[in-house]
Image 1 (cartoon, rainbow, N blue to C red):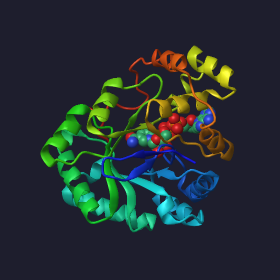
Image 2 (tube, protein in one colour):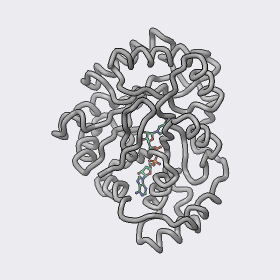
Image 3 (cartoon, rainbow, N blue to C red):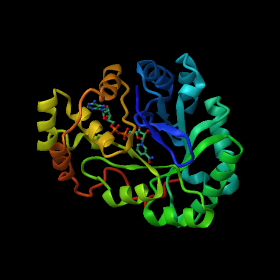
Image 4 (tube, rainbow, N blue to C red):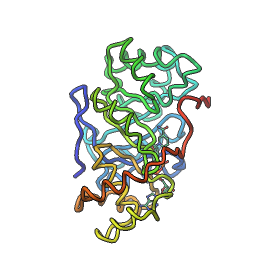
Length: 274
Ligand code: NAD
């Protein structure tokens, strides 16, 4: 059973889920249904992933009650702005075949466009209308968060950002903690770049777990929600098998030394792909 984290809007989010970036549209329904049958309860999608139709099909094929599954999608950069974000969310719901998503995120701030505040107002409206039960952002930095909170008085429930052992973002996570924002880690495995690192290897040897499991367990223990991706059933199973061991304080301290502040993905201050 996946632990739940409280959200600042009174709802809850499963701490562990699976991501659908780069999962082929043709196999997304099967991957989603398989993951849900294995025990995952959160699916991380996005309009730009091109597989929302399969996501919705997988949710229905799982046979689980809709209310037991937490579905996330995201408004893409080219759809920023009040009216276009509303239309984009409606199009996502149409593709998903769902009446609402559990979490709707602004995918990137794209500060040069100057539209993320209007987009945030659209998400507030969509939540009022019940089309998104919770709303949040992704790839927002402190200045972007401060602006939308200051202008609207509505704090995002979640900020989904790149976090892995080489990019631990302690200052941003502390900001999230002060504001009651759940940190959700994307590219949590960091492209495998820390699998061979001594602290990961030592914890893997002691616990009999894989390097990936050690790293995912580290995310849980820093209090983050996490959404690893695997399309293989064995990989999905492995990434779900995190609840029968724990890293010690010394192991967590050793993991903290791996932070180099180096990103796998783009810099949110600059990224503006349409
Ligand atoms: P990830 O860290 O989940 O790594 C995926 C890669 O690791 C794949 O190549 C997979 O085959 C491999 N892998 C998975 N489990 C493994 C295991 N147990 N052992 C060894 N290798 C394993 O990376 P990701 O897909 O980039 O990120 C996860 C999810 O985060 C995405 O699917 C997407 O939903 C989300 N995401 C969001 C953003 C954003 O801007 N909001 C950006 C990137 C990703």
